[in-house]
Length: 199
Image 1 (tube, rainbow, N blue to C red):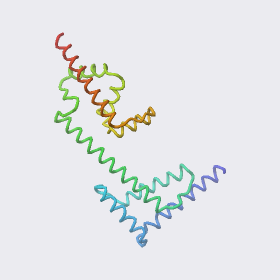
Image 2 (cartoon, one colour; image 1 turned 180 degrees about the vertical axis):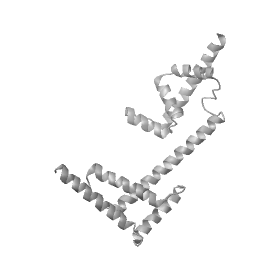
Image 3 (cartoon, one colour; image 1 turned 120 degrees about the vertical axis):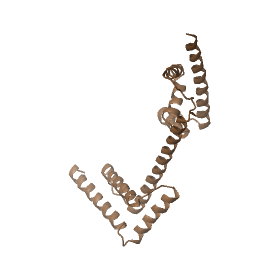
Image 4 (cartoon, rainbow, N blue to C red; image 1 turned 120 degrees about the horizontal axis):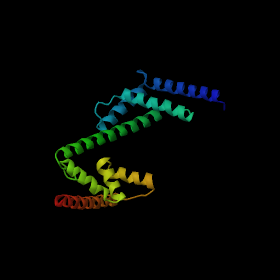
């Protein structure tokens, strides 16, 4: 197929998709009202605050146009496709809200001094902590970086190891690694503080 013909075909697919979306969302279409009600209900069930179903459909429509551009394919069942993509978008929103909440909690705990590494108050202690970290193995440094500096969950760390190294590591094993790495870090930190006080 020539580039010009393929471009024309993609343009037709996009126009068809937009027509189907417009028809679905026409105020007189009961399926469209039912679809928007579904989005509203699902949003409530997922505890998504201030969900705008029209904005959600707009985002899904943009993704549909991108899909057609990237794949040069027609979307066969527009209502089903929109429903699926809108649901995925809502699940991503929930994940984003959860991550934001966890980051806020982490920041709050850092402000209150409940950081697992302990509250580091002075530049000298920060320097000692950096020295202690440098004495840890690369594996220990990596697990501490992923957990405390990047703020990843154990599930996300598990996925990181699978994607990066092809290793499938149980979450219980990740917890043990983290615990041992923290113990070694505390030991190094206290040892470094002891060395600095004797100087």
